[in-house]
Image 1: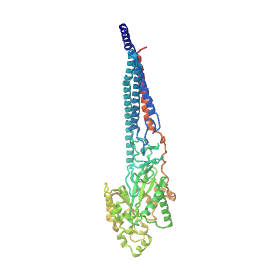
Image 2: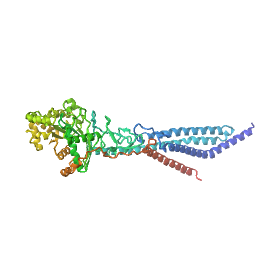
Image 3: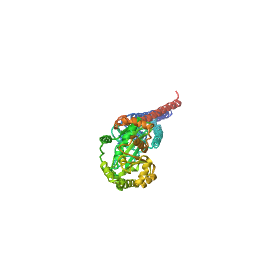
Length: 574
């Protein structure tokens, strides 16, 4: 080639390079940087909307259906959403930028003209590569945003969890709420029952403020369940976590009061329990309260016992199996509420140390009823005349177990408790006093003090003194089929901690007719309504969390674009 032509080409190339780097490169580089950064930002925002906007379980970041209940959004799913967005956008941006650079290289540098448009190619490629810096800063800012949302949300969640847990603890402590299992072979103390979802029947073992939520847990079926008793948890069906047995309706809201009836075979425990329920029902109805059995079978057994009394017959002997507590839910006007667990085992369960050990409900009682068959006392029986003994044997079955031995076995078992078996209240009930009054030795039992002294005189002196040591209060009561219901109601009110209502005597007279209506098993609380978003949609907490992140991302995106426009306007004024 002619030297002059070569020099001319070199001059033209030098002029193109000078013009390209001096005037084209800065403008094109800045424009490419802005466009590439905006494209990366737009792509990130688009994928964020696709990931965070859906309210269904499926989507770019699917939400796994839990076995029982959903965990709180901020304890896991929020970071899965972030990772889904990041792992989708970053590779896509990289592939897109790499593809554009390859195509630009082939197009601009693929011929002789590449020597002249090199500044253009360099400006475009450098702008695309340099856009990675603001894009990286944006991704870092988004990560900080996620962390900020998670930190603030978790702080609020933790405060709510602690406050709700403290409120429930105060509620349980103030109300002295005791929760125990009434079922045979269990009788365990319960910290937190299992609650059944009314929507799908799933049982929630940890329905309390925690990882599933502060105020509500969301079941796998979408139902929202309360986490504390004050929020309505007592309206759910509850089950024992140890044996799976059904618990009373208001478990956790009112105190469970275990009441063991202690006495030998044929001592009259079942008879006095039925008389006590009848008297307590009359008292409760008279003061406009409510009394109901928890189990239908107990309501039916009580109705059968009342019919047997009305016919003048005897109650059937209690079966040998371990007892299911007869559960009675009592509510008086004011704050007098109890779920009474009336444990009436066969007397044979008190005739040996091994048998008494199986009665684990004794571990939770603060009161007990010691039922004494006076005709089982060896000293009294030896003092009866032949005619009196024959009359007693024909009128009622008598226990052959010395009441002193029965109580001693129970007290020995109670001493294994941390409180050494201390009882707040013990009621000593001398049964069959209608028969006892027709004997010479049992004619003077008019007062409680007289009954206490009489028991000491017929061989229970040591027992009386032992009870004074292990119990805070002891009362003595003479019971027969003709005993005034008002007196029985007063005794049960005292031993259960149910304060008697004012004007009790008048109330009992008014309640005599009301007691003819047998107590049923009407529910004492409205069931928890099934509310939720359904099993195919994420919990509302997930949706709120995603919308909070998306709102923050929108603000961050607008702020970034605005800042870029302002900076460009200042750098390149028109």
